Image 1: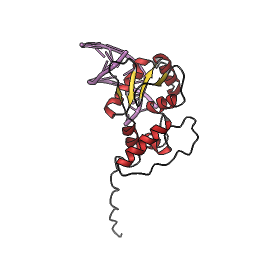
Image 2: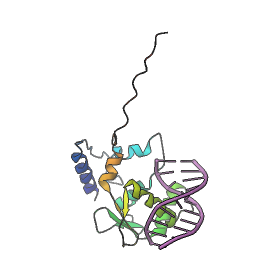
Image 3: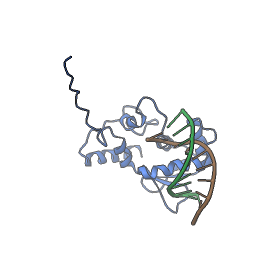
Image 4: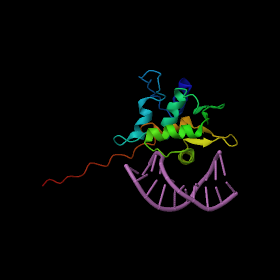
Length: 155
DNA sequence: GGCGGAAGGG
DNA sequence: CCCTTCCGCC
């Protein structure tokens, strides 16, 4: 799975003419994406963990009961919704987190095209990996051009 | 269960 | 911005 994610990222970037995919320097422990995949999400400075990072983290290390990969590519099933919510709540310091609230956060991902629902399958969602990578790739979308240097008058 | 609006926090 | 909280609706 880990390798296929990278491969998908590679294909996505290749199709964009940006074959600058760096290999992850870290061991295969819990890291699913190279550092650059996270960067914009953390900018500026040190921000909080994002929900999709957390989900990928659990999926990546095969976190037993709470969540697991589904049948299709990128699809995952929440096997124990309230446990997942509790885990997420612990990570965010939100002791009253539950599946109702967590799922609202997941629904906000629909518009961002990070996730979508697998209709008809209970507790089943699907990642848009290529979109995910591209959205978080530095310079995609390209940053606005730097403002022209101010014309300083000589005092 | 699943959806999305509304308000609000950090 | 990225959720968290709450909620009416289907």
